[in-house]
Image (cartoon, rainbow, N blue to C red):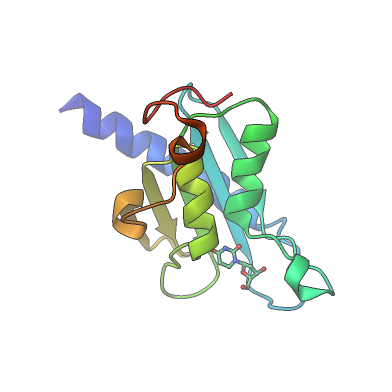
Length: 146
Ligand code: THU
């Protein structure tokens, strides 16, 4: 069963990248540090951390920072996101981040604690019926995002 082993190995390296990214979180207000790493369809990894602001509503979640890094580097088709957040229990992404994941084709979400407690979900489980760009742009599901 080579495929699951390879999958596990890439999951582990994605979690490790998210764990490292968490160290750069700027979270002086919530003190809740989050790191994220996203894998693009062509195998590249982009990372992000949450970035807060004294005007609280301007804060950015780690997942969206990582995803938008990938998009700003030209990647439109993304696959998996790993998130490492403070706490004893693995934290599931907020609703806004789930919607952003749907925009760029994320299928798998791995969440972990700093101590290594890990849970995996499909995006479908987390966001059963997303609002998708196809609705506005007319291209077929899974089609090119330019
Ligand atoms: N946060 C994330 O980075 N990702 C989530 O999915 C949920 C919340 C951040 C935003 C804010 O900086 C802090 O956690 C507390 O809400």
